[in-house]
Image 1 (cartoon, rainbow, N blue to C red):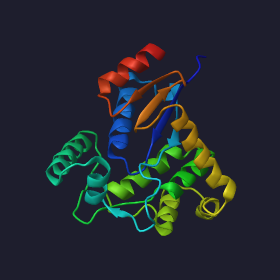
Image 2: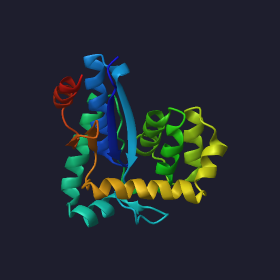
Image 3: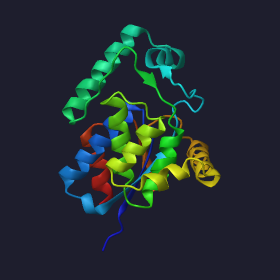
Length: 212
C-alpha cells in the first residue's frame, strides 16, 4: 500500500481565496479518483491577528490592508462570487459585512482534528461567514458549527479557555510563518513542495499526478 499524500492547507476561515483554492483542490482529487489516497490537515493563519473582538467593516479592512479602492473591491468580490458559483459555493457580500477575529475558530479546528472532522468544521465555519452572514468570532455561532458537524460542543468550547490549546494554535501559526508562509492559501504537499493561491483545477491535478 502506497503512503498517503499529506496535504497541509495553511489558511484562514475568512479568506475567500482559501475556500476557492480548497474547492478546486477537492475537485482535482475527485476527478483523479484519489479521495482515499490523500490526507488533508488544516493549518492556522490569521489574516489579521490584531482584529478587534467587534470585527471591522470589510471594505475598511481591505482599504487599510491592501489599499484597494471600493471599485477594485467590488470587481474582486464579483470574481469571487463567480468562482464560487462554479464550485457550488455561495459568497454573499453585503455593505455592512464585517471581518471577524478568527483565533477561536482556529482553536476549534485543532480540536476537530482529533475526531477526523477538521475539513467538515472548516467548511461549516467558512459557509457561516461567507454564505450566512454570521460572525465566526461569536461563541454561539462557534457552538452551533460544532453541533452541525456532530462534535461535542462543550468539549470544544472548553478548549477556547484552555491555555495549552490556545498556545498550540499560536505556535503553529509561528511555525508556518517561520517557513516563509505569508499569504494564504498555501497548500503544501508531503511537506516538500508548496503551491500558493487558488490555482486552477488543472494545476492541482498536475501536482497530484506527480505524487500518486
